[in-house]
Length: 48
Image (cartoon, rainbow, N blue to C red; front, side, top):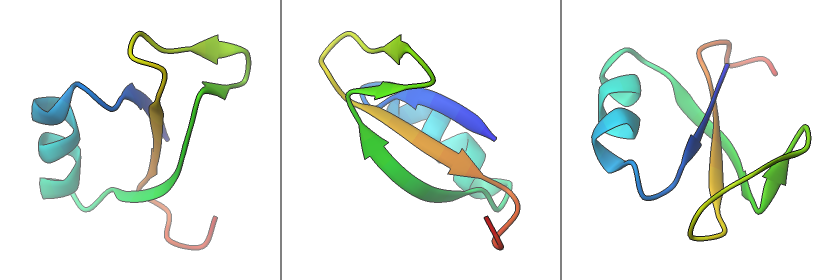
């Protein structure tokens, strides 16, 4: 899994090329907050 700032579009694109899928967007994940207010939760495992 990866948790990334939504503003980091280059990293998101790189993960999507490696078949990661977006599971959720939110202001915090596991206590981590994001500059700009939104993070993206990505996973390689499609069953999560």
